[in-house]
Amino acid sequence: MNDSIIMSPKERFLTALNKKTPDRVPIFEFPFSQKLQEILIGYKTVLYDGAAVVKMADRLGIDGVPVFLGGYCGVEFFETKDDRFTDDWGILYERKGWPITSQIKNPVSGRNDWQNYKMPNPGQKWRFKQLNDAIEANSQQRAIVSCIRGPVSFMSWFLLSIDNLSIAFVDDPALVDSICNSFIDWSLELAGRAAVIKGFDAFLIADDWGMSKSLLISPAYLRRFFIGPYKRLVDGIKSLGFPVIMHNDGNIWEVLDDIAAIGVDAYHPVEKAATMDLKTIKQRYTGILCPIGNIDNKEILVNGSVDDVKKEALRCLREGSENGGYIISSDHSLHDDMPVENVIAYTETVKKFGKYYDGKLKL
Picture 1 (cartoon, rainbow, N blue to C red):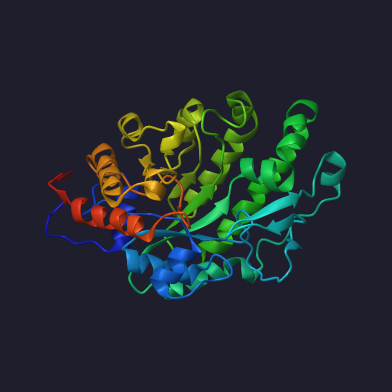
Picture 2 (picture 1 turned 90 degrees about the vertical axis):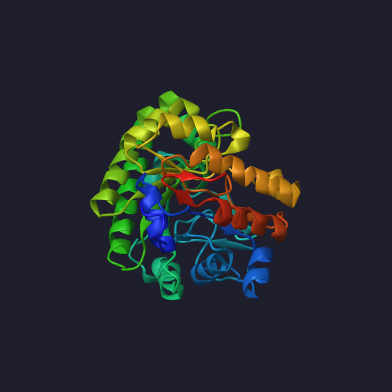
């Protein structure tokens, strides 16, 4: 590219997402921090808030931000003063932290519950409020990424439980197929309704398959029950004209080839603590997957010095930036345990040293 070209945040983000070289390595973040929110924009929100997230991105110079459709990981777009509440899926939650609440009762335990279960309406207007608010606040052309939940974590955390799902893998595989495909159908309808809204740029499917040392579910079961439906979800979203990012925590080496074959455009967050090596992933999947992430958000961004943070950001720039196709971020999210000066040191380091010159960085 011409070194004199300065891209908008949206252009920069989408160029890297398409595995090409932008003017600078773009930044993407999940800002899960009321403390950071209050410092940056002067107020706190009760729930994760689309407009507030865009304003935080403006202050930090973040190029892309996620905005959730409907409920996400306990982030519900209705306000209640009660410490416990039930959403329209029939999931009982308890408030613990921000913006995450904890589900404490699942509505489906087996076939009898499923036969009497009715999924909620994906077209309710409140599901799109945060997306519309983010678009309205987006005066500086940030890339807005619309987020939906993936089938593995939805079934293992929310609708069923990991125990009931594990039993069903063996005792009632047809039940797993039925629930999974019904959820894919629901998600495709949700995505289709969102797609008519003008002003956002990509979809992210959030689905946690890994722990720090291994997968949560065996590769055989992931391939048997989820890879096919997941591909149907990705294909359906891409047919709407949007690139697709997969958020998947943990050590997922055993199925990373499967994920690449599904057709997602990018993989987030490349968790460093789970041995997900950025350099290896960038080399192995060049032109196939855009890695997003890998800055240590558990130790360095929390307990490291400003110099430690700068060195970590520079490491990621070196390992991920060659020939474009890399978006930098923490290896999960920005949260309250991080000193604000560390967050600023990370973003400022990227803005200073992440500029491309003839396809390379001057590090």
